Amino acid sequence: MRRSLKVSLIVVILGAVVSLGATVASGNTPQLGLDLQGGASVVLQPKNKVPSSTLDQAISIIRSRVDALGVAEPDITRQGNAIIVQLPGVKNKDRALQIVGQTAQLYFRPVIQPLPVEGSTPTTAPPTTVEGSPPTSAPAPAEVPTTPSDQDDPAKEVVLPQKDSKGRVTGRYALGPAEVKGQAISSADARLDSSGQWAVNFGLSGDGEKDWNAMAAKVGKGKQIAIDLDGVVKSAPTLNETNFAGRGTITGNFTEGEAKDLALVLSYGSLPVQLVPQTVQTVSASLGKDSLHAGLIAGIVGLGLVAIYMLLYYRALGLVVWFGLAITGAYMYSIITYLGQNYGLALSLAGATGIIVSVGVTVDSYVVYFERLKDEIRSGKTVRSSVDKGFARAYRTILAADAASFIGAIVLYLLSVGSVRGFAFFLGLSTLRDVFIAYFYTRPMVVMLGRNRFFTEARWVGVARGLSSAPAAAPAKVSA
Image (cartoon, rainbow, N blue to C red; front, top):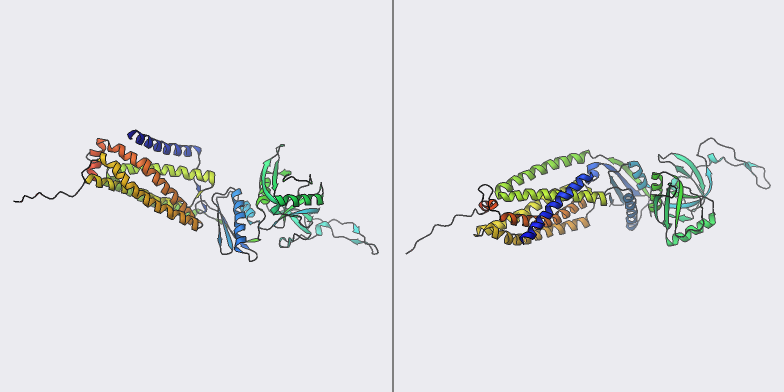
């Protein structure tokens, strides 16, 4: 029994030291939320009134786009008919907002012919003749107007621009009616091909394969297919095949960024509703950092006062609390960092609040145990004989209290949105950690120290002296 407790204690302490050491050595730190590190925010509004289910589908697609950008814990919520997208810590805010804001349907159109940029130096087109009439001059290609993006009708011929990363028009295409919509694409990803060039591999759905092959056969090998998103040509690759067995590859002189952006467009380009950006803003982290700084100072001061009180009131048991809080902090820092690096978990102000609140829950667990231990000692038992029985009774109370907190955290997480979910998640995580620490650290630590005479009997730190203060016994009476 004693050996198993000692092993348990050593494992817990070593686990805290190793996990914290590995986290620090890796150079990783917790991911911070929008309110702590800044980022970008956009409010999207449907152009026309749509059902709630359609908005939910749009949110799902936008979330897939944002996840593919590698944004840590994006906050995508609905407020009425508006969709609010918050992107914490994005490195390229303009690119991220551009991809999120691409909300029109995705179409694949046959290229009729490339056209020069509108307004460029005109060239004279050869005259056309109609039998029975004199020759007439056709408009120069540069004078053909570009179709406005809001008139990108899939059933009509259009003239659409192709733009570079800065939004400048680099070319135009006369395009035929759309033959295939974006739903035909089931997946897409950017990879280096055998020649070391970036390419985009895409997969086709069952019905999408039929539609795609029908389009390829109609357009013909060697002809171009334009990828039309929101009235802009994202790419116009040439068909090298007319029969695609469920997948295909788009090659070209792509940079890594261009290939990945095209893969995102193909994977998540088709939204069931046209969304219009209402407000786009960059969020400063200064206010959140100031609030976090003030909160940390208040937390450290409060924690210090609690630590001093525990030491004065419970003597050596106060040291158990000190070391326990240090172990708890090491585990929490390591877990939060790991989840942030591998699963995109971001620490927001609300999450930090949940962690601070959980410190009180942890200290309460120590108090419950120590008060049970005090009751046992006051009944005349020794510290050594009281630690196990006192813990058995206290742990039931700790489990009941932590279960109530955990159930509340789950309900809050499932029913809330935004920052409130962050608070609920970190509160629930801290509650589970409290159950673990109480059983595998607090119990064996107190049991081991309870067998040490210095720990129990010393004048200034002795546990027995601090816990056995009971009311003086009533004076004996002698009766006849």
